[in-house]
Image 1: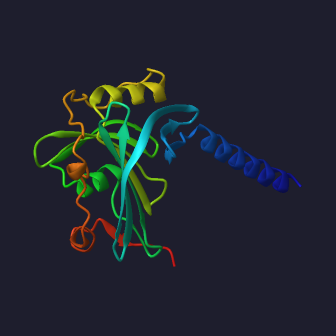
Image 2: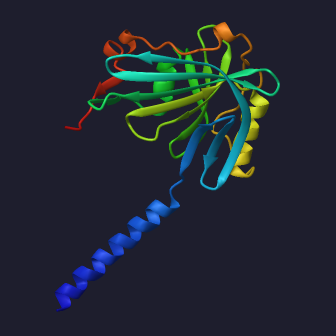
Image 3: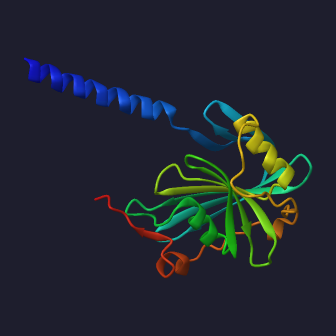
Length: 206
């Protein structure tokens, strides 16, 4: 009886620890719903009023990409890219590295990170800086929102953290904003990016 009671106590303790771990983890979202784009961490959120200007889809053997160009109230553009791999494949690297590869960047700096939501600055091949919010809900999906100025970028971080966070790296203030519809898309999705550079790999799922 003592042994059974001990086992039950251990099981209850493990379950309680697991529940505590789940409850203390940050949950995040990056959602476009009609004319509102919302970024959230736990109960804190930041919303942008947007208008959909153009939508494109790219299809590869291993990956599907949905690109949505959005216009803000000040007439500037931002881009939301939502991607998902085929069931037999998954992203091979961390979120910052995947963003670095998709943008063909020279370098990428983490400005702020909470669980699976990253605020990044990518130095493009043009040497210009691009503000990027990237999120992976799992190994088979990656969403990126980019193109806002650094003031708005900082404001979103402040909204989500209630001004109670220190940035991991210094925020470059002169990041580019997007205004030309023809040149709004900054990513470089290609078959070679998957097959040769290894952005996408076979999934362990059967």
